Every structure is written in C-alpha cells, then in structure tokens.
Amino acid sequence: MLLTPQLAEALEGRVVGPDDAGYDRMRTVFYGGIDRRPLAIVRAANSEDVSRVIALARETGLELAVRSGGHSLAGHGVTEGGIVLDLSDMKALEIDVEGRTAWAETGLTSGEYSAAVAEHGLATGFGDTGSVGIGGITLGGGVGFLVRKHGLTIDSLVAAEIVTAGGDLLYTDADTHPDLFWAIRGGGGNFGVATRLQFRLHEVDGIVGGLLILPATPDLITSFVAEADAAPDELSTIAAVMSAPPLPFLPPEVHGRLVVMAQLAYAGGAEDGERALAPFRALATPLADLVRPMSYPEIFMPDEEDFHPLAVGRTMFTDGIDSSAAELILEQIEASTAPMAVTQIRVLGGAMARVPADTTAFAHRDRRIMGNVAAMYTRPEELPEREAWVRGLADALRRGHDGAYVGFLADEGEERVRAAYPGSTWVRLASIKASYDPHNLFRLNQNIPPAVGSS
Image (tube, rainbow, N blue to C red):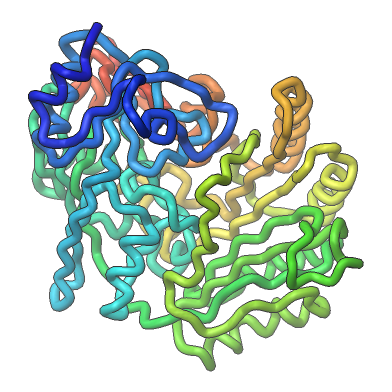
C-alpha cells in the first residue's frame, strides 16, 4: 500500500516513508528497545491534517499511533506497519498575560512551554522532564514540581480542542461537551487527538530548587518522607533511592554508595524557600547540595538527545513508607545486578488532594505517595529478571488499595490499566469512549475499550 504519495498530496504537513531521509530518526521514541517500522509518519501542520490522517486510519483500518513527545514507556508513539501522527511541528503558543491563560499546540514540550511563559513570571505545572510533550502528560494527569502548590496539570486545564474519531474538531470545557472534558483530564488519548490545550497560568516568578543528595539509611528515608509530607504546599519533592552514579560533583568515594537523590522545588521567595528546605538539609550532611534560587524552567535537567535507556518500571501508590519498607528498598537496590536500580518516592497532597476525586478521570486524589520502581538493562535476555525484580519490590511496597498512574504505565495489560481507573471511573470512561470512539480507533494507548451497548 503506497500511502506516502497519496498522503503528501492531501496534507500541508510533511509525510515521511521508509525510504525517506530522517525516517529512522522520526520513528525512534525516547525509550530504547522499541524498533517498529510504520508505513508512514505524518508531521501534521494543523488540525485539518490531523483530521485527514484520522480519516485515513479509519478508512484503511491501519493502526494509528499519536505522538506528542514520544515518552510512552510502552512505545505508544510509534506503530508497526501503521501510521504515526506526529504533532512535533505544531508548536503555536498564545499567551494572555493579563488573563493568566495560554493556548498551546500539543507539539510543544513542557520545557519549551515553560521557558516561554517564564518570561512573564508565569508557569503551568507539568512533569519533571523538559522534553516530554505537553499533550501526552496533560491527558494522563501530570504530576510534577508544582503538584502540591498548583495541583496536577489537568487542574490547570481550562479548555481543549480535540479531533475525534469521526474527524470532527471539538472545543471542550466544563460547559461544552463536559463529559469529554472530564474524560480527557486523566483518561489519556482514548477519546481523540488533542491539538490545542488552554492552560491556567500561575505566578511563579522563580523557585528555590535543585538537587540535594543525602546518604541513604532507613531512618533518613522515613524522615525525608515525613518532612515532605509536613512541608508547606509550595514545596514539592521527588526522592530517588539508588546507588550514586559517577556524577562529576560527587567525590569518587561516594560513587556506588546508597543515596537519596532528591529534586526539590519551592514555588516562592528565596527566604521562605531556604526556611522550608532547612529540615531536609538537617537530616544528614549532604553529599551534594545544588539547591539555589532559579527560574522555574531551570529545574528541568538538560536532555541528552541520543539517550534512549533500556528500562523497565512499575508505578504504584502507597499510603506510607515505614522503616520496614525503607529497609527493604535499600536491601533490594543493594542486591540488584542491574546497571541502575531505583525507587522513586513522590509525596503528594496539597492542592492536588483538595480537588474532589470525581472532578476528573484521575482517581487517586487521596493517595499520599506515588512510587516508581525501575531498573535498567543492557541486553534483551536480562529483561525477565529485571521485570521480576521491579514487580516484586513494587508489590511489597504497596500500602493500601492497588492503584497506578497511567502516565507511568508500560505495556502491562488491562488489569493494570483498570488499576489506574478504579471502580466507577472505569465504567464512566468506557461509556464516554463509546460515545466518541465507538470502534476503538484510538487503541494504541493505555486502552479503555468502549462500553458494549453504549452510544
């Protein structure tokens, strides 16, 4: 099926086929080990292009992959033998400084968006990586450096423009297609392709943030979690328990030692920030302290363009990290033979928790901690061992009912997708899916099949 010439004539954007220059680069996603060859890659120029590509996928039955930043752990931004709809060229941004809102096309990365709005002393909270596309992270929820102060990314979503499976461009907000607006705030890419998103902007004229590395002990881990939980809402933390890599600012004798690599972000003034961070510095003599006043976009670590890690991960929620859990984390990381093994701990609460649970499709507002267990590998034959290690530790750390953050799910099956949308959330999403995508055209995602018998 020779799609490339056919598509090129119909679209304003670029069409790249297997024989074209740049094809291999464009089919490469962030995570390594994903080697899929699409029939065509379309770099859409506008929503009309998006609609035409959706129509082609609908008419031909070809699998459709939608790519914003390409950071899906499951590699959902590329397909084998289908069509990739790549939004990377759609980067228009309209900032209303007085109205404190911004309309952003979904080819923008969180770093690009954050740098542009920071020129006005403003910010919208996304995740913790600047190269992530704003489309994917927003539709999944968005848990990042401003989560305790300003909530999830979806809590700042005001409106959206979505191209549906039928090819229609719909505007949606709390009053217009409210069922769709509820679903896209956490329900992922199941309901259409988001081409533009309108965000609320918050005054964030600088933060106090950066990396704080502390020696890891059970007492320090539990104390860190307690301090993060008790901290003012302005402070969000991400703590990674791992063996210290050979970073240039760490002395050689620290390399390989168990450490807590904490990313801290205080959304406020320098004096208040230093006061809020003092308890963390007092937990132990820091091995490295890179925390300082900075602009908000500086908190994103620099991207390595050719970095495509081979990694397996497991996301979960837990209601606490006690001393036995902390001891287990350290024991398991020390025993792991992976090139890198890590347990990430994100203390939640604050503004995120004050939004009623049924306001959006993100159903975990009451959970205290989001954890991620991950391990890297170098050869495919190592994968089963790494998966078993990750799954075992994550299951052992879970306290309270099961749960998962859809933005960190890999290819783990329907049971794990249901864990991201427990109970009535799944039922409601499946019903809305049946209304907007009854034939499950948008299925290369953490999929929610349409409810049978709904319309």
